[in-house]
Image (tube, rainbow, N blue to C red; front, side, top):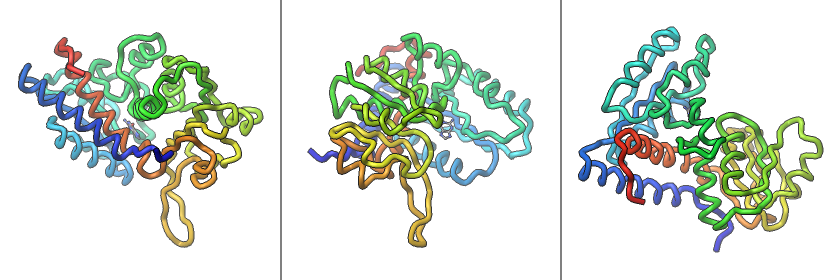
Length: 291
Ligand code: GUN
């Protein structure tokens, strides 16, 4: 088996499974899941993400609603739109694309979303449910990482996992999910003493720092699974290039399994967003989805 974990192929299989669940909800319960995505401003990377989300939502057989707001809208106007979507029965999932303009309070906006319609897993209630073993919705990128790890390694129980990065979007929920799988979990970050040795202790190493090629192969335990969450745009030899947070060539030589950039974690994120939307639609209607 190749040590490279093919996130693109895996994401396709997740999307196919979601498509089947959507069909089942439509034919058995007359429910068409709907996802509303709200984009404030003109950030080019966010526009690309939002376009891809809309396209893949429709391809999975769901309804997609896009709300594009000018950068100048007030926080109160955005909160009014969220309130309207919270009360719209055709909308089962609400995603507000981050980052938001500086004049908006991100936490207040996220927590205005009904937690039953939160598909990012960023709402405080869902954060709390994840950390107390409850049945909430889980952030898309860490969920995609866990799916790939379990598919490749089987049980994760008892493994040493090191997550480099402590963001609310990836690092912290990733650590919570690994703990739920009975790993021994370390969260490392920019102030961690002796980061290379901490990384070398990992059977599972997750890099989510947003620093291009920061982790070299000699920080990786031979045979370890390396999950690279970074997507960094750099210029090399006069060309634009996407690289991860690990130095791929040297890490690939040592690792037992590794996700490439692009084509690893990235494609899994939107697939998991579709997964979360169907889960929320089923929960809202008290329907148990077939697995
Ligand atoms: N911006 C970059 N990634 C994400 C994400 O996963 N969710 C939201 N809401 N915004 C993002």
